[in-house]
Length: 150
Image 1 (tube, helix red, strand yellow):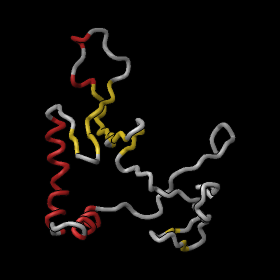
Image 2: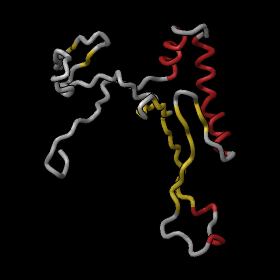
Image 3: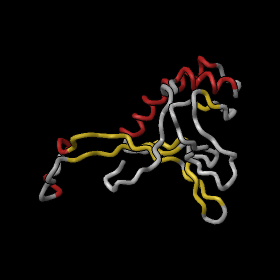
């Protein structure tokens, strides 16, 4: 419940994160590259990305998005530009911005957020890819009058 006294939907993770090994296995199934080669490439990606960002560049992974550094600076700032020093940086973060694609009619979609995502009210049950509920989820007929959150 929010401070307004209203309830809002929230995304729920129902399993452990996908790790490099699982990603590599699935990529190998749909490509001609071996799982071992995919693991090697994915394991090297953070090092190569940080090299690019450390040199002041963003990193663009086509159809995925952009990665860049952002910082949290020392509170209060400095009175003049000449007083600003590298030690004023308190924390460095990596910001990810999903790729944006514009369709006709100026509709924008972001990578990793396909229109095909199916939202259901979660009651502690896991719904498999075929829509079969294991353990008590709810669903509807799928017509436009159904509430996508149950």
